[in-house]
Length: 512
Image (cartoon, rainbow, N blue to C red; front, side, top):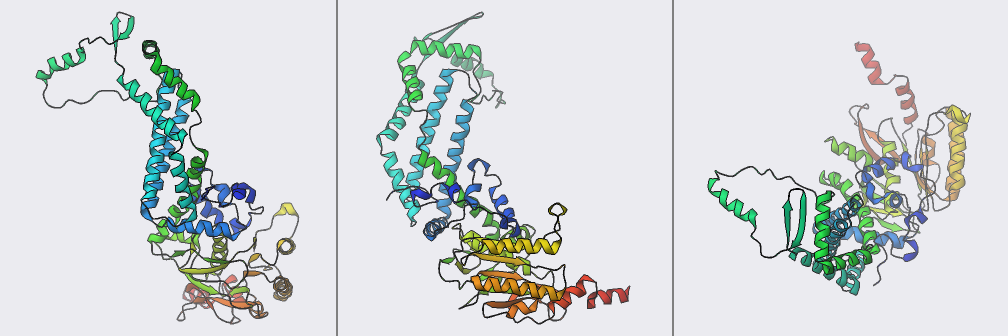
């Protein structure tokens, strides 16, 4: 079993940047930019952004990642990987600190410790992985790679040589003679250790434990001139050991295996996502690895939700509302209508979020899900007018939806959130039906949030869903979206809310 990458099974797709999605404008429309920014927070050193922007165009890689995600449900495995990541982080910090040191002998001595720590970390990682039941091809092949690597002549050589040189350096004994400003270094000749004699003499006067006033000197602090000269003197007394240390540094400067270094970076793609969703899961929300199809557009989900919103609500201790959806047979487009602020846009965003995250090979919101492997996600959300483009709002919306439909293929997914609110209802219906006709001909999968009830029953490919309110009082939203025929009140209610003419608004004015 040949290991290439923990993100890409095949060698040809190792570079995430080669698969980078060209148009990422939909990320902000779906609030995925917020999700990704939160995930990447504190992970800057790993440069994970290209992986979260690399939309996978083959299901084999998606299934490869899903297997790894299943293995990572094991908390012991996560602990092992986090411990290894911490050791690798220390290694990088130590190597960076070496660049600030001036004296050759000090640099080479600290380099020995770095290599030794790296070798121990790799050995511990292999032993820990070998004790855990792994099922994914990715982690199993990586474990086999580690086994071959630690058994290689190179690894055995650097590990043993570093250990032996450190041991030999530790065995060195020498004497420092100080007379005025003169300091001499010579080999140890069984002289009396006066430090021990002084401590022994004054121990009889000790009254309890004294505070330790020793200054802590970090290993990466530069030696001063006197210290450096003393070390140089010792190196002249024991040239063989210092020569081996010098040759070791020169021969093994690029000691870290590039595959293991890449693994340390790439595994953070999974860990960073799991860290992000962990608080949401602890709040009782469900996540699942969806079934992905490249042919069937019959999608469904149970208990799905907007991940960006859920993360915010959970942090505030508030409840998260979940929704179900399904499309069967020829059904392709969910038309969502209902009162304002009822969760329609949130539902549309969650639909797009799930498909994008699924096409990264990650777990999605919900207890279970069946999703379509779309070639691209296209969005059209209402935006404010921009004077710089010299287009009115209606013109701008027509221009943008034209761009969306020009890019779309039969395998694309489209999310539309309200359109043409700046024109008359009659014009809205006329234009929207023309667009729906185009969507139907392309056989696009998607969600359309609108007040135009006629779209909900446009043809056999459209399905009506509505945001609901508490029956006893129409002013209280449940934020639940259910399959239900449009009731013809959505547009009227939106107009009433716009001009403060709802029953609740009128009642407030009568009471004031």
